[in-house]
Figure 1 (cartoon, protein in one colour):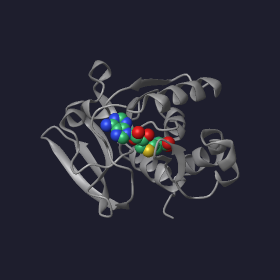
Figure 2 (cartoon, rainbow, N blue to C red):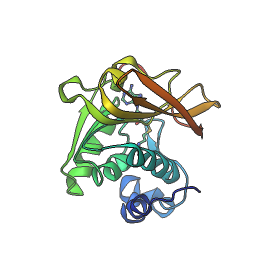
Figure 3 (cartoon, rainbow, N blue to C red):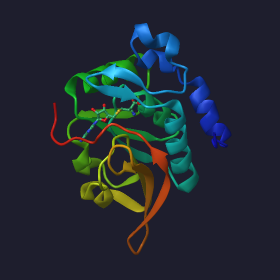
Figure 4 (cartoon, helix red, strand yellow):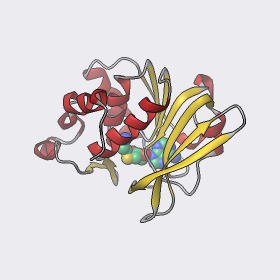
Length: 194
Ligand code: SAH
């Protein structure tokens, strides 16, 4: 499907996705589909996790990575294996708590989890080399762009339901460059917290 990076293929092959979904869904964990994780949210499709991770890996450094929409923690666990430090923000408290526990149980120790509105970013740990947003909005939140280092990249689905485009934004010395990558389907990036 266009995932050519051996590193990324290996990450997907060896990250135990069944541990991030309910036991009742575990038998479907290795299908290439999104699955429910409760609260009306979904675990991202493995292909999309792979595609976003590959783009970030191929375009620059990955020391400090910010993830918005941690969900069940699957994408966080994948990122944790190629980034020095991952910061993830999730707006639903119950999901943020479960994500924290799950990563602790899996002995993933380089992910910091925050319950909050990811549209505001995490200024205390900025700037970030890479920002991955796992929920769609009509434009990239300005605070996230502010918190990107020069040479940094943000990847995010932009657009309304049914017409979202996975978009790569690079911060250069002169400003921001935007590139449309492919059509995708994500849950919406919501305001405020639950
Ligand atoms: N990458 C996740 C996918 C989660 S789906 C995984 O692998 O499981 C998107 C997530 O974004 C949902 O959990 C949703 O609650 C969260 N979300 C939506 N709007 C948000 C916001 N403003 N700030 C933080 N998280 C948000």
